Length: 107
Image 1 (cartoon, rainbow, N blue to C red):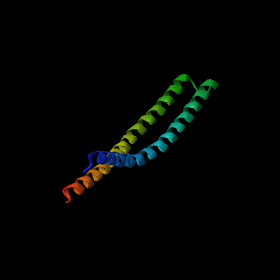
Image 2: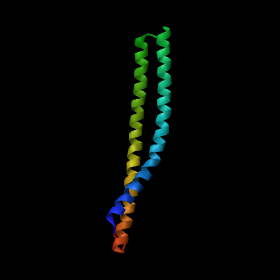
Image 3: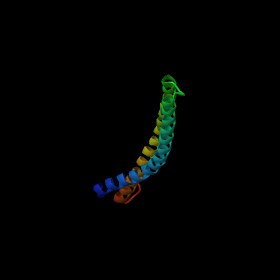
């Protein structure tokens, strides 16, 4: 059993498994950040034009902030799923290496 090779394979399997979740989160975050930026820009423009007071704008900006914090909570679930997939993939590689080295399925 080549332990160095096994560790590299475990890390590669974990990275590949987590990568799927990262791609999902990346697109989602890009969309949410773009939406927040557009809302904030509109609020700033309304304040500059005098159609909204700074106090009103602050309340709306705080709502955007709260929305992004909710996204953070939702993404923590995705991060846990990514970690679980990564650990499972790494364990599959370790299991195969041990069973191969022992010549019998023990793990």
